Length: 507
Image (cartoon, rainbow, N blue to C red; front, side, top):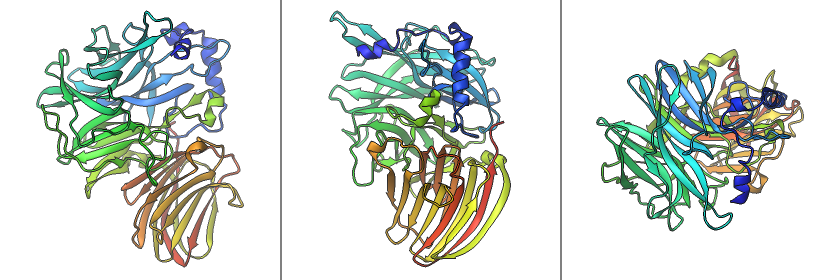
């Protein structure tokens, strides 16, 4: 714990307390990175983490995220943490409004942790966890004290705080790992779900309730069929869709089983009947992974004005080092996705607004018989939409970010014969978290035709199978020579039809 507190010795309340030359230096280092994304949200420096307060208010989409812009500053090093604020008309092109909340009160001194927001008339109501540490009577025995705090943002995008916390410290029967409230409104009353750790060091969630967003009471623990599922649940997000209840969350500490739970931490979901209130019973099917790639965590959803349920996630993982850190930044957001329920599964579909980024459409119609299709690309930011007919073949390989000889590449294997989809980033570029492996495999029975939709950016790949039935999200860090893609038919003849597009950036 002492090392954790040392990190905050050069802590500042506000970014404006830091000399401008230090901030400019950090931004310049980050700008020099060869891995900057073109149409994904990134921080101008430092760390980007969990999406927070994702909402639609006052005619705009609002996205906040965990933000430490000086995390990699040196000589001198500064620590500053808060919520970054972005707004958008279309969920694709974002305007940076700077810091919305900074860790400058006694309730969030050591971190403005994750939270959420809900529009109410002329206010955006906000709720988040403030993280603090106190030094107990035993020397250097630091104790975490979480606070659950409310605030609101007005129509001028100014956040107002000053409320006493609605909950202070840990709850009897649970540890101080108690955070990440996600709020919703039902029948005119407010509810929020928070991740927590039981005293026996297993994870779960708690439900709290308020009639006025001021006075809150504890309804109890989320009642699921899982009495022991990891050691902590982070970033829980409950919502209702198509008369079903859905919980998206991050159960930390799941043990790898076969091809499941291969990352350091997972994002999963439970789908079932609507949450019963006030008794908190949630009857669901089995736990499913939300994403089968290498790098997805901390998702949050919101309801759009036209009624869609939109999800966005942090494309990164806690306690994981990425090659961008040498350029003094890490983390980005995924593309936003529309959620739908089909066949008792949660489908994730790239939002239609992304189509506005498309330029330079090219059509592909190829018949490959144990041979290779090759194209050199003008840029890394592209969309691919293919229908693959391998009725007369065993497998199909897509190599993205490949060099001329196809020796360095990010490989996707659609193996119909083995009924599996494999991602292989072992030769894609700089190493990332290799202790957790360089391939990901999903058992997936394939028909003779499969639709594959892929969004690539300078340092990421997002793969959608059959209309978003299965999704794979991955960071990769190739070099400039990796500007080709290859298509390969294995064990017979494969027909490929579809389109490719170049994707414009946010500017």
